[in-house]
Amino acid sequence: MKHATSAALDQLEPLLADIRRRAGLKEKSRGAFYLKSQSLLHFHEDPAGHFADLRLGDGWQRFAVNSKADWKVLLAALDTHLKAKGNATT
Image (cartoon, rainbow, N blue to C red):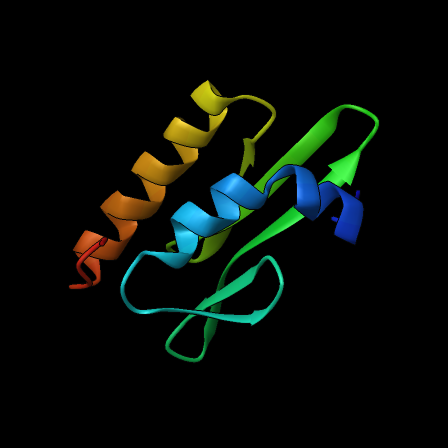
């Protein structure tokens, strides 16, 4: 599965804008978010659609991000993770 292209990220821009509002995250390159110095979230694409990889604990969890319902699931997991790390979400 390849990293998301610029065109794929264009389709996800409303989601990216929502993620950018979370406190403590730094977008080092478009669609690649870090918490402090550790990679936290990035995006992929393949024929099955668009996906986000979110670092939870010691590993990555993959989330489909093909609908607004999918986006809500990802954002809820991200917010839970950020709260556990002591970061406000917005």
